[in-house]
Length: 618
Image (cartoon, rainbow, N blue to C red; front, side, top):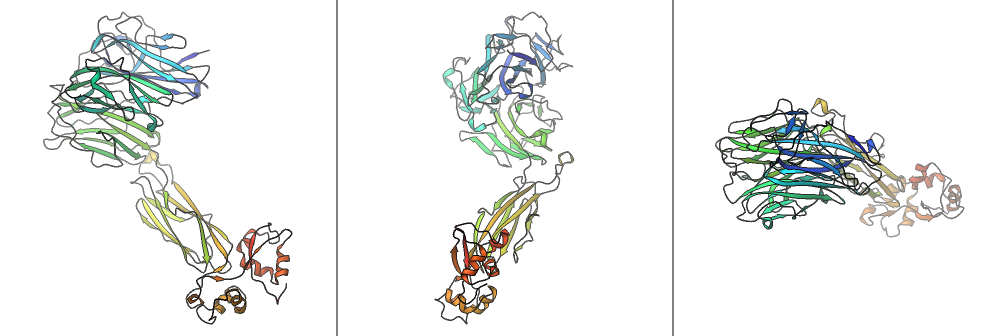
């Protein structure tokens, strides 16, 4: 059984269709699983861009308003569009042929008065509950295209909840402006951007030069051959694994007369990478919550009165844009869909116009990806325009610092020899800082070990652990943990989430029965450390010829006992008796036995260090 749940208020009206007229510039459909409404519930999102001067658009939930090119209705919370054919546009669920019509859509943005296309962006969201994971298909269709009043349109989404939890989404933009022999990016996103694949439904391309259009399946770059001019509609399918979404979009090309290609790459370039080798017009940026950023894109000279078309996709849906600043020579419309806290300024002067995009306070609720696609055009000659280009902004929740060093976390050291660990932590957010790099509170340093103080260097911090394992440390296993933390609070009050910390631990194992002599250290000195006599040590190191002098000149490592493998039935006091030593001596040479606290329980096969004596027994 299939159940329908509408997320928008649905109004059923009967209106006459308008024959022989078209009104659609762009349409796309995508889906996402919605387990809050059912195990197999799917929420569909339809985004469309319409000609707002089309007579059968009913704003404010049912008012028929005739608009001039520069007019925006006073009430824009909802709108109903009726197509040139009865019963369109509509949604059809193909497994049952059930349809929905008319559709009450939410209007989000309008073009400026300077844009002769007079468009309005709207979306429709509906949830459908299925009885299984799929596959399922849904279609959005109608009539007709704005540039082709007799041409119907349709887009589909394919659902299989056993294969994916959502489909890709495609950025809505009123029209691509392209120069012939150039490329522009079809903006799309998904939970796995690396898996995105693009394709053209060539059977549907509505243009006079189908052969002149190509779409890269791996990068999404749309290319037009040299000397191609005119307008076209294309259907693009974007897939990720089994799931897919599709869109109809229009684009215009001209062989010359581009007003202003980008003068260069955005400057500065924080983490920017060209999307593909064939085009510098798609840039990826990573930014972090709690910190402002700004991207400045230089332009060549633009004519006075140029206008901008811009649109975006944020986490698969859309938000109206507010507080847009307009400066001399440029105007920017409400067609920018972006988080309401983002500032989007187009700056111009006679010498160096530029496009500046900044966000002064992205926070936890803004985590995700936003794609902004743009072009600038001459308000007098709309055929002249920049190439369409896109920016993909990824907002990442401000992470804790990460440890760059130490890399190796299992270390083996020797008694008597200086060991050192260089510790370095880096905060991935360049504007954040590492405020602490110290030993973790649950760690006790071994006797004689030193650490600190840390060198705090902005987003980076360094420190160094040094330790000479003493006699009696052999066989011991020592875990040392380091903690790094960033600033206690974010620079923005509403982003205060406390201090973020990270921990890195290392384990140091000290070799049994081995000691590295220090300069001018005699056998008698070393024997005192191990609570034995120098004759006993000499018998373990027959290569030493001058026991009264610095033995380090003759051997680099000194044997301080024999390795003994515990047999079945062995216990500590029994081994001590058999070897003529005390239990205290065994514990001195095997720090792990003292650490375990189980002095008389030894596992078969375990190796311990013993300095035997034929003259003494416990």
